[in-house]
Image 1: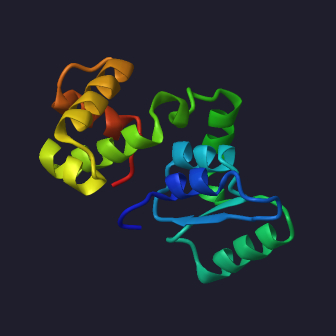
Image 2 (image 1 turned 90 degrees about the vertical axis):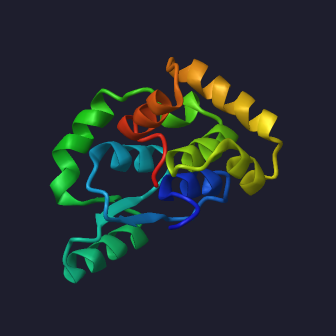
Length: 154
């Protein structure tokens, strides 16, 4: 998805009524992303590289109200859920994640400001606050941290 990650979409869907069943269909075979998706309310996490038969099984499982997890990730996701890291959403605000996503994509502060209809000074303040929250001291460190901690998907 070009402008929104699957996890961000889940965050936005979170306050929706019960009965909504979300199956994440992704190329990311990352147990941290799968665990975060389940924590945010996904009912399933399927990988694009799986067979069409497996995808049908995932859809049917979620429609029955059960949870589905790609078998390639089961052990690692269970380990992560038993020892959860700090939730990603508690580290940064939605606005900070928007700014960070654009910074990681290589946008200059003026471009970020224009894209988000903010002043360059506001964007600089948001960036500074992120750097402080993540305990980094340069834009390069901020980008590295974002990629390592999977704070944004680009």
